[in-house]
Image: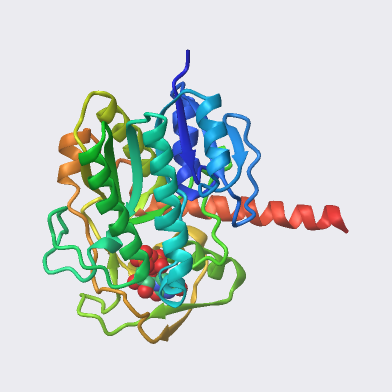
Length: 335
Ligand code: UDP
């Protein structure tokens, strides 16, 4: 019989790529997603349940109907700026709903849990690349919600027969467009899809700050292909299945690219010159964030093998082209 994995937020960006990979690896994938972004999701490789993690009765139904072996918890809000303006929304969804899910996991004796954490838990780095034992002092509500859940998981793991892996993502990007998967956020705030859309439409792209203490004065980030993120989740699941202890891992490549380097590659891949406008810094943006991925490499046997910048951008571009064509076709059908 297939092992069943519950994937909350499995119709979202990183969740859907991971869900697809696990389905290919022979798992029965059960996706619980509230379709908050109204994203299209027409895939037959998963059991898809529309609903929210805060729905106690729905969780009872799912856990009694299916024999779930592990939970991967992706569901959560991710917009840093919005989290600062509307902290209740973020604490409700990212913390309170996770609490509901964890209580149910313990009630139904599900003892393997993989959590989508974030590099935002570190705040402003003292040392680079960032290791997992670097101090955690988030500079926004989003990062705080991720850190609170990490604490919650540690306490639950101490009290019960329960093991978790928290994965601190750096910059997720790219797409598996040939499987109809990619990034679909409303509104989109991430540099790569925004720059590609600017290249495709001829609209202006805004650089948030060119006065940083970096070689070209723009921010540096560690960009990780979503296919590598999915592989890391599979590795984390195997780690827990083999009796691994609760751990926290960075997921990044260990190499950074500046905003300008991203834009140059977007221009090359799309074959279009960007209209660039230099704007004020975005609040809470550290100059450089780069992961030290050594711990994940050692414990999970995982390496970022799909994260070459040109591949990332070219995959994201193909996905944008496909979604652009599909939305155009569906508009024509309505007319
Ligand atoms: N960025 C930018 N213009 C944009 C979006 C992002 O200059 O329209 C910059 C942003 O300031 C940061 C980097 O690109 O330095 C990556 O931002 P993104 O929002 O993609 O990811 P984050 O690092 O915030 O998770």
